[in-house]
Amino acid sequence: MKQALIASLRAAAGGMTPALAKVAETVLAQPQTTLYQSITELAEVSGSSEASVMRFCREQGFTGFQDFKLAMAKELAGEQLEKDSAEPADDIQRLVETAVVALRETEQLIVREDVTTAAQRLLGSQAIDCFGAAASAVTAQYLAYKMTRIGMLSRALADAHLATMAAGTATKATAHVIISSSGSTVDSVGVAKLARSRGAFVLGISNRSKSPLAAVCDLTLIASWPETPLTGGAFPSKISQLLIIDALLAEMMRQDPGRLAMIQRTAESVSDRSF
Image (cartoon, rainbow, N blue to C red; front, side, top):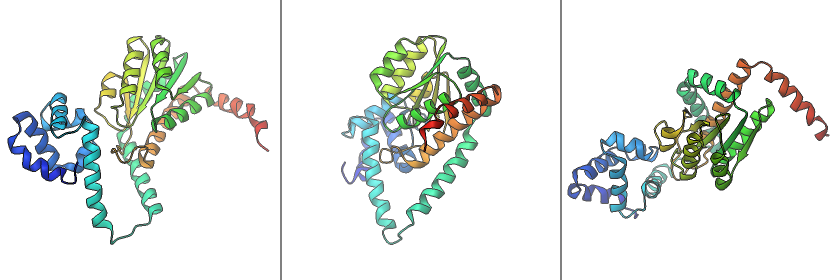
């Protein structure tokens, strides 16, 4: 795309098949919302299918839904830049405000019963593998760190091949936590699906409630502030994921107070590492 993607869609919609026209009409009615939707969500809202969404994107000259969203995000960002060019903002204040909103929205999205169940299943696991691709690998590393602090055997796997091999050797005694903001990352979905097929408990952490990842996990905890193709790794989406992790750890310690002693032990074990 082309600078005129939205204009081109308006012009082409009348000649599309009924299924593709539904997708086009939905996108044109709410282009900003589309940027934050997964292919599953757009298919549901438009009353079509994921296959129709893919066909729609390819007929517009894109390789897939993410490629289409990236092009549309660039066009909309250019339009917004023109609107805001005369109104310089304080970036620090903007970041703080969006982070606060993300945290409050995540609090509303967290299903307490799901956190309770997830904590119980993780406490009952012999080992916990944490996986996330790209920016989500940072969140996975944080989760593995927090698990280690409370005495759980845990590791973060940033390499997709290693994560896949770990999933292939999973058992009913192990757990896998898969983190993906979009819920549509091929490697993340593949690891989750494989680990679950081996009998492991699979927990997803995502910023999208309806996605390919959510469909293959035993349980998914949802954070606020979904990312667009241009905002991957954005601060608000990451801080909302960290809130979920800390809420999960707090619940694990509530269920097993003995974990508090593990925090003391792990702290003591590295006490000589600081001047």
